[in-house]
Amino acid sequence: MAMQLNWKTCGDNRHWCNLRKLKLDNNNDIGVYMIWHTGDPSRVVRVGQGNIAERLTDHRNNNEILIYGELLVTWAVVPSKSDRDGIERHLADEWRPLVGDAFPNTVPIVVNSPFG
Image 1 (cartoon, one colour):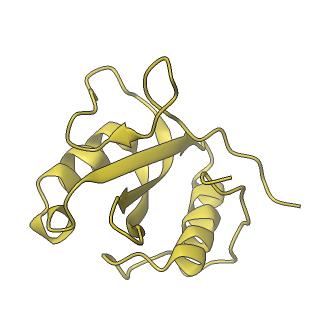
Image 2 (cartoon, rainbow, N blue to C red):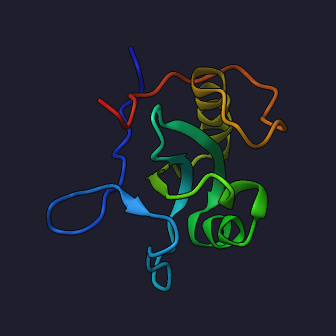
Image 3 (cartoon, rainbow, N blue to C red):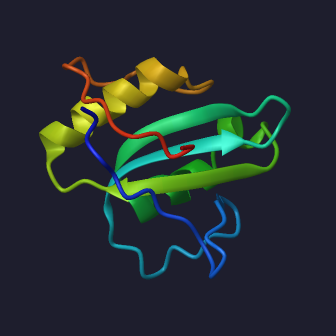
């Protein structure tokens, strides 16, 4: 059975967060995240883990990620480092992100998809 994560959304209507417009000032979450582009078909651009505000701020300035156009993001709070490593490994295996290849060499931890 998959570990159930609470994937974050934005606004009262719970839409996916826009990476460039997302306010990160008061975000102290530690966890895992996924960034994807809205193309047809859409594709996962980057998965990762750590301090969400710091990591997403870094990605906002990364041209290797920004070239994919409109980018959406979600994240889930995961306090345990070992759980984050396993979840990131699973997300990378499942979604094959377009950017990044240094994912944790650990046993994947299967989680629910943010996409239902």
